[in-house]
Amino acid sequence: MTDANSTSISLPKIQERQLTSSASELSYHIIEAGSKGSALLILLHGFPELAYSWRKVVPSLAQAGYYVVAFDQRGYGRTTGWDTRPCQEVDLRTFALTNLVRDVIVLANRLGYHEVECVVGHDFGCVPASLCALIRPDVFKKVVLMGHPFLGTPTLPFNTGPEEEAVASKQEPQPDLHAELAKLSRPKKHYRWYYSTPDAAAEMSPGFGLKAFLRGYFHLKSADAYNDPQPIAALTAQELDKLPPYYIMPLHLGMRETVAEAMTPDERSNMDRKCQRWLPDADLEVYVDEYARTGFQGGLNWYRVSTDPALQKDLDLYAGKKLEAPCLYLVGRKDWLLHQTPNPLERMEKACTKLQGPVMVEGAGHWVQQEQPQKVVEHVLQFLKET
Image (cartoon, rainbow, N blue to C red; front, top):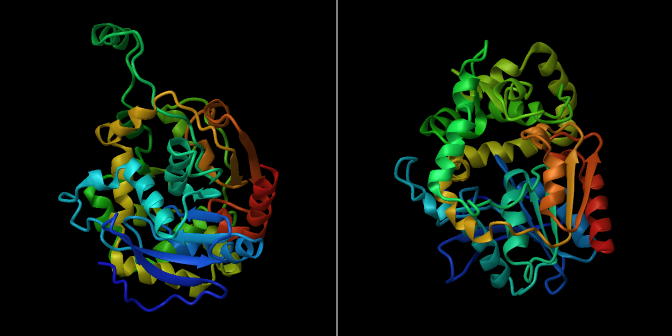
């Protein structure tokens, strides 16, 4: 598993260290810059990322006068203390979404802060970031979401009982989306549900070929690849089939095989010509070394929680609640993540009372803070100044 005494990652103008708290079983691996005592920004990475994914924006945000902290979240990198047992044995309750929020609150207190000026999330990191601002707006004053939109809180059966619900279900039966995807002319499956299976970590984690897999994965979701995001009209198999294969996968392939198949000669040529600009080999090696050491199961546990309604019942406490903190939503122009569901921006406008955006970042795909760090810094600082 992870080793807190691993060789340090060299990052100019950024410090790294391990922090523990009696309030948590975790030993947090953090990177930080700026003066402690200044307003605190906490940055939450996505999958398959690390605190390291914020390396390009941390110094500039700190130079603007903030104390900036990013950490390897539960299940990732050099943060230790989380449940490392195999897929079938891990206690997924420790990866519950509200527990991820708790991790951030414990860290903020350990750093000596009762308030966080802004929590910033990217990809899956947007989920705990938005929940931080939703659940504890007294602590998290503002929130920035990159890529993953906040679509609202759960709805509960209102003024109706199980009998009425059963009748309505028979009158308007909902199709089995996974069965429908499997019936397409080229059978497909949804990546989130694949990531929730025991097969995913076993297929993705072996060190052999890991560099080629991660290089292809990062490339295919970037602006360098042939991504042309389009809205989907409905949550049907036919509409979802518009999404690229790293989201709607071939039914009988794993993610490594899917990436390999998608790396056509044209894509490989694109990658070879452009990838060093924003993800040079030395940077990629950090991801390769970390995931070769830890595997992917820790991060994949987040998906297992997100696809299991029984593990999300704690969110019913916030049913109907809106995100009331000032919220900036920005996304790479070439990022398909926005279009995994119908009408995401309309839903976000209803879910957030003080929404700014969307800000479409030109020249960026999914990895917006790595592909276009200066543009991201400018948008974030402008938001912090104006709110």
